[in-house]
Image 1 (tube, one colour):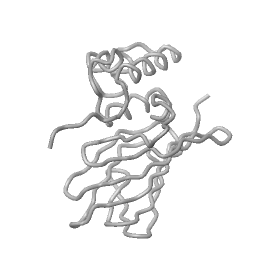
Image 2 (cartoon, rainbow, N blue to C red):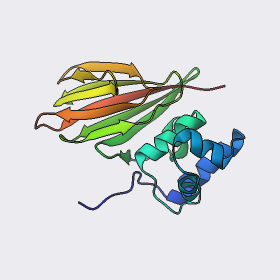
Image 3 (tube, helix red, strand yellow):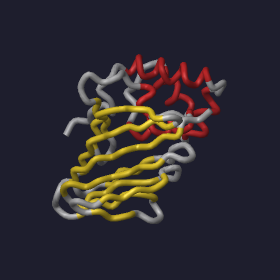
Length: 182
């Protein structure tokens, strides 16, 4: 299977938005790269649109900037698809309430691989409702398990992951709750 980009978006537009957010926060390229756990050259290539960053890289960068990943995407006329190593997440809606941003995704996790996500900024939580399959998700040290009809949630300001168990593809919704940093 041929690798696909993490986003169905122009990498130059994504890079420009990341650079603008970094400048607004007064963070150097080197400082952001270090805190996101990526090398400086990779971050530079993402900001200039030279590479299609992985979903894991984009989440690591936006977590350090204290923004939801939706901050670097266009408001979708159709669902925006994010592809990670072992899952596909379709961004359905972004909405705000008071000092919180929410992102609602439709998630597909095929069996056999583990999706590992970096920590988001403090206070971010994830809420998953499983429709098909069996899913282990949550903090890497203490994952939770959910089957059809089950709901699990956790604070995702720690490294966390997703893994489908058994032969069935997991289909679920994911609601990410991002407190807005002042």
